[in-house]
Length: 404
Image (cartoon, rainbow, N blue to C red; front, top):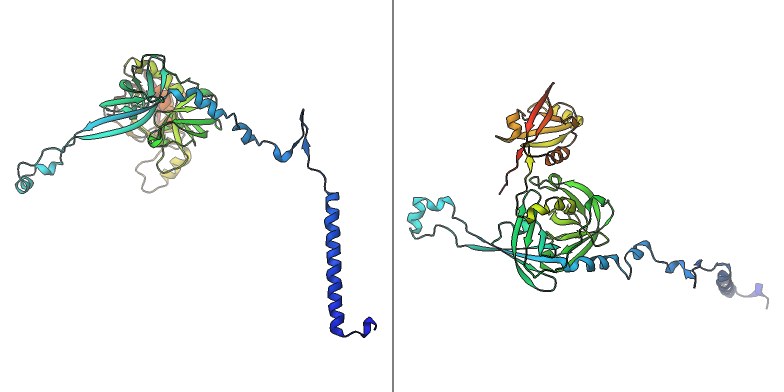
């Protein structure tokens, strides 16, 4: 029987079977041919054996490999990092309304005059800078402490004596008597630090002793005013290495295990942002703190903000603005402290400081650093723009008193 004479249903079935058979043959042929068209994986030829590209180490893996620079840095300084525990007794008086006669009649005269003493405990970090037992930390770690206990990494505890404190730079030196020959943290230089450098934070965050975190230097010269602590005079190293309560006073290291900063502050409203005091700043006053001497800081006595012509113009266009601001670059005086050097020299609120001793002033941070580098009692020639007039005033710096 010829194919044309077969029933239609059989002819359709035969056609489908033939199509499936041809599809299988073509697919198998393609699979068999594909390997012959592919080139072998490229190889990197070394002195001994070839290495596939997929097996090459990435730059990150090379930086943090089996022989990690972090491990080497921590091993170099880890034994010199200490934990600092503090105790402080606080006595609080009752609110004034408890002395009200009506209150006394209601509760009786036997009601106590003050609340029972309260024991406050604090936790921080520090690092040994001299074999004799000198420990550097933050001033706020040991501030007003009645008892300071320093715990070494090997588990030994020593009573610490606060040798010197400087609240303005938030630095302190604590002395322990451990018999000498203590491990010492090598001090580097913060002036050589660059944005993007490795940053290793070591300390006791939240009571977790001997904790190490790794990050980079995010930025340099972040002013204390920008950080939110305007009562300090510091330009911080900003890092994304995790810093938490308890890290305060601990070292920030570079990739060679040298101390480049002292971990100090965090922003409660941010993650991955921490701040460290540059070690060069600490070096400048270490000798004074070690001797128990007072660190003297000059000041002018003004609260100020950086001013640009654009900011001044925006303020002047505001119908609620209290006064017209000169549209210049400089520092706008927002407030003059009573009996301060600025007040005695005649500086007023609304003045714009444009020059000091002939040097152009363009930011509040610049002016603060310039004053910090002067001597107490030094006379500065300050040029101010007051409305349409320019005035030259002589300001004699004075000693900045403690805020405590």
